[in-house]
Length: 612
Image 1 (tube, rainbow, N blue to C red):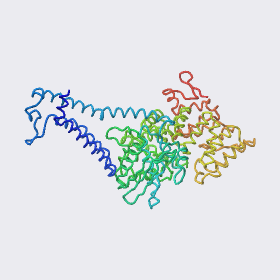
Image 2 (cartoon, rainbow, N blue to C red):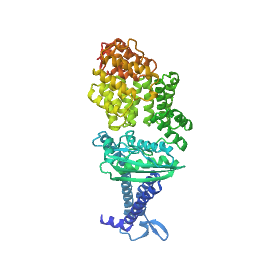
Image 3 (cartoon, rainbow, N blue to C red):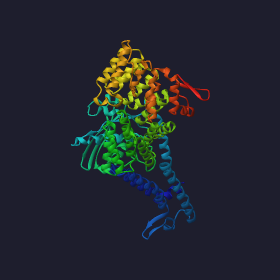
Image 4 (cartoon, one colour):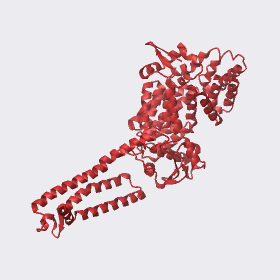
């Protein structure tokens, strides 16, 4: 052993190895610092590290076998004829040492490139499990980035950056991204980070600003702890608009590194995977998404321009599907059925295009699930929802839609479970909170549901007052129901009084409530309400007319009103043959037989069923 150590020293193996490791360490660390300064791609330093790791056994073996002489490199055993080892023994030792160097190098490389990823993936799996527990998970909320551009019309761009960075962070498995929409409630407000973090259920907040001038954009971002406001990380990026996706990627990766979280990515995979190189197309997309959120009725035109300019941009196709479905509902509410005609077929086409372009993008599956839900293809819709959630389990919009689908099919407890997840992720979105309140009422938790609706009503959330009046009437509080009904529509916007909410229909529905409150007869002739107003039929001599709306909607391919057939009042309707026929025509019975019976129904014999 002593002779071997002496031989290693004499042949300069130790010295060469030490010099090599020193050069490698200095190069990697210097490259990391310079890479961050120059915004170099992450794969550059990965290649440098691989080069030095793989080069070590080669250099060490070369140092053992060869020595530099005035005549050039020669085998060490040939340089000094007075070797302490015989020539034959030296050659054998060459083979043994080289083999050992190769084995050690392979072990080190395997640890770095084979075992390392496995350990990381195990860490990702454990982190993903921990992230499912809101009490133990690190959670972040991306606050709306401030628009520092001189043009206030660029507000859509700063909002878009907020959403895109949020989407990138949502791909990190152990990072719980909350309040994707709720955070916008604090836009433009200066509030204590502790109060905001508590309201949003976030342990960390991401704040930032966007300044866009011509073809350049400057994005500043910082990560702060919500409990004490301590800054964890901050950086700014000043680049060409064509590099905006790289900025989003860098911000998301830097935040993950600061929180010491594995990215859980496959080799060559990025957090920002759907990219379009055209600046104008991307800005059109952000404008379209903003219009979709605000229901400005411009979203359809904007998003059609996006896919016309870049037919390979999957998020554009998914957003276009949402726009087509939203406009379909808009035209239906206004009684303009002729305009909504081809929108469902077009929505299916755009949704399938999104999936074909990006099979790992949850948005495409959510879009196609919504289309199938509108078509009454229940099994296909549920399966698509599950595929979307497998790709993004914390997408509140997807969870909310999935909950609504379960509600329509009668799986009330499961629907409420999904809606509770939505509330944890998005505590301040009125649309989601209204659906939660409705599910609380449907499952018999009346007090909690009324409390939620009352809060929404005081916040002037549309239709919250209408559902509150329904519950008051169900409880026999008819005078309060009539007053609440009047208040709701007295403060409603003018454009609400169109289509199914035309003023004469609203006034007639109010007359029914007032008549019941005053113990007098309601109007003898009642119109077809075909909307949420139809609950007033329950207090007339024709309660079965509550089924008029879902029956009409079903003929037109609209399955959403079916969820209201599960409301507590009047439950006697669910025992009628008319209700059974509706469920059969809707395909619900076939679904129940295939996937299991809902909360309130059970099979009777081989071809019948009953509901409570």
